[in-house]
Amino acid sequence: MKRIVHLFAVLLIMALLLSSGTQLGQAQEDNPPPEEITEEGDISIQAAVQGFIPVQGRITDAAGNPLEGTHQIGVRIYEVPIGGSPRCFTSEWINLTHGLFTLNVLCPSSVFFGNELYASVSIDSDPEMTPRLTIYPVPYAMSLKPGAIITNATSGQRALEVKSDVGGGAAGAALWVENRSTANGIGEWVKARGTDATLVIENSGSGPLLKAFGGDGGEDEFRIENNGALMSKADTYIFVPALDAKSVSTGASIEYFGAGNIRVRYSSTGSKGLVFGIPIPSVLYGMAVEVEEVTIYYDVSNSDTSITRTSVFKQYPGGDFGGGPAFDYLVEDTTARKSTGYTSYSLPVNHWLSSETGFITVALTINYDNTAHFLDFGGVRVRLGHHPLY
Image (cartoon, rainbow, N blue to C red; front, side):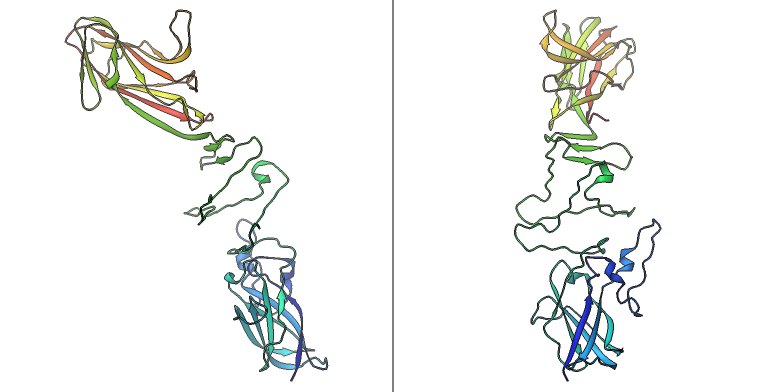
């Protein structure tokens, strides 16, 4: 017997779209459950939208008379208009009134990725009716279902394009990606398999290319400027052994040790001088370096002999009025240092280097009370900063 099916609506709500059309067919007992409200007030899309395609229609015979009574209605979902194998199939015995029916076709998420789909209907033992009905996306959606897949197979066409015409920092972001798991969730995973870049960042204005914020609530801990310069909250520590230290006083006897330290004695007592250059970068990856701290490691053999003056200089390329190089004091300490360990100096001013300023020198003045006394000089540790906010 020839039958005709008039489909009122085939609504694709499972994978990509959650729309106003999802209310059709919800009177059935096996419809998706109602929306749930999460603790944070968001609609739980995962709970509200299961893998259903609601289908409504009216079945008539060849003369246009609606069928009545109980009939077996089958609906299949295909990826092609002719042939192929169904990706989804549902068959139910439905009691028809005036030929009207409603059922839900259950489909997995993998079926929906922006591709064309087609629906076919069969009645009782009759074969599938032709032609198959094209399933079109709904015109408006409030959200995406978790697990949604967007696939593009057309060259020169983007799979997804998100645009915004407003600013306002985070509140005006064109795209916001957040993983709210407090365990080990990843916010975004970007993957490529070809020879081109995995991720391209472009700022055609003057702002930074990238800002990264840590969990301490501070400003951007990591930043890539528009010119490619790198800024990082993380500090760099450089240890320089004392092997290159030089005496500026006569009568010095210097012993060198494999650990990198030296032992300095003098053949006469009095004030003696020792200088030591610190090779450090002044600009690193396009960003000026900040000398934040200098730590000097030493050991005086007797408390009657001490370091009476500790100086750290930053030299400039231009000369001063005395004919020598111009410089700033990063450290100028006249406290007598008699301990057997180290002294650290934080540098609050004059501590930024540049492409024109980068010579750092340590000068120690040691007062020898006895020619049997000596100074063990281990070297210098320098802590470098790479971000003007930290």
